[in-house]
Image (cartoon, rainbow, N blue to C red; front, side, top):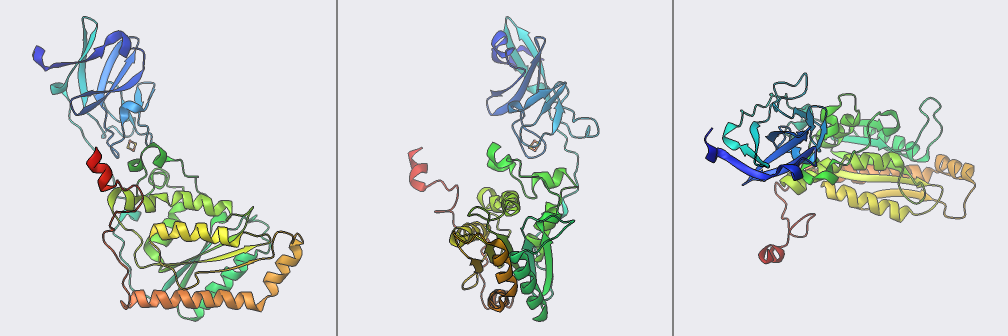
Length: 370
Ligand code: FES
């Protein structure tokens, strides 16, 4: 290597203070490691989704990507055992007169092991068939000893009514699924929150996949039923919502609309109050996913702050013909809107959403100031 190929990246004593750090030569990001005063350098760009390897951690001989934990050997750039076909470039490093130098021209080849695309990543194309309603139960439930749930009861009434009107129906009970909490990849970088969800891609045992499949690929109508817990929707609901960030995030980072011409409606049942707060959150989140709403998009019941006789509340929901009629009417309104959308009488599809006023949009006036 000619001397002019070596590029100075800094003082060796200072750089030796961190086991792993990101250094840059022009526009090239490099993950520089140091152990026992020996330096190694590999590309700072992860093979998976471009995560910043130099901002990760050093685990033994491997640099661990901070986004989804892929590992690459700190000296050779080769993936961890079992993933050796995944390689990031490795660079020659030397120390001259107390300065660390890297030879960019020495880069070994990057090689990405072809990974079969995840089934969820297929194009979103509606398979022909009758209108499809997905019910999502979010109530907490001891599966082994199920008890009466008002929100589940009204959802069952809704699904039965949809079936009687010729719709295909499916019920997902979140309490029966085993899925991980969102692990906050979005907090590391918006681009680290991928579609399909990073957890789903990494963990075949994670059953959130059923929810993604149902919401994104299968349903024309999604009807979510929740109890009220301390003035908000159930913890299962929020666990699902956090994992649905990857669907919304496609709009933000790729202008990609996964939810098109789909309808959402809600059933909210609580012994205590705050129906409007719960409905407000649900409407806000599902509108951000791209769902449309029928006129009067939720039915709800709550007896209020001072009603602590929960047994009576349960009996009221179970025995109220009016509430069950209301659930059926919500199905009718949802089917009406879905019918318009499916038959093309109303097309709310937008391939591209104008970004002004949308989440994470940089205003033109701000851009001009930069
Ligand atoms: S593991 Fe590096 S970007 Fe996903």
